[in-house]
Length: 267
Image 1: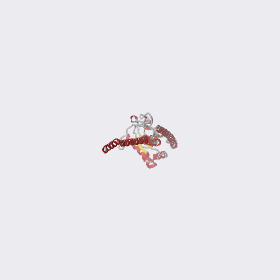
Image 2: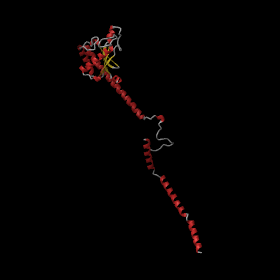
Image 3: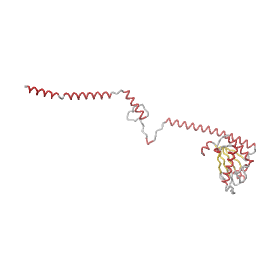
Image 4: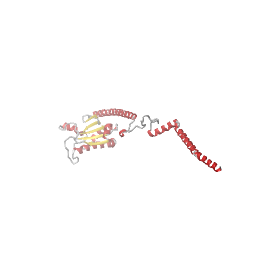
């Protein structure tokens, strides 16, 4: 009888043994569902803040909310061509217009100053009765003062006669007031020259231009940085070399007070 009861008690314990792991499993599943539910209920304000911060770091623009219908916050770069902000284009165009207006105003002011200088030199030439030997004009290069070689140099020479230096110095001092770059051009006629000093008109025209530059530096105090001598020989005539009168006009020194625009082109 005792053995029978003991056997029956063992069978009951064995039949109830599965209840413990089953209850543990249900408890574990309940805990998982609770965690999942809690995660899915993150505060919306915090979520939006996180999204906005992330969006700014990645795209640099926007409100942090991804647009609907799969549109990307970052626009693709087509064919490798970078996009340009239209506001930057507008600013660039305005800057260009402003620069053009400034250049125009400066050009008008400079032209006026050159015209005033031309009038002063013309008055000086008239007073000294040199109008027939010196002419002035204004072109795209600036103010051009043309002097016949005869009033500066002896035939075949590049030395400025002392009696003629004073006339040139007066002109140079007027030019100096504008503080402009000055180009001195030497020109000859087409009659060849050949002596022990100057093998051709190239050397003669260059030497004469250099003599004027030297005078401007030594006697007028003009900075060497403002001066440049150029010899053109007979390549730039202003009259017909077939006549004596034409050849006389072609033998000349051109003193050019360069405009700012022309100076920039040369630089």
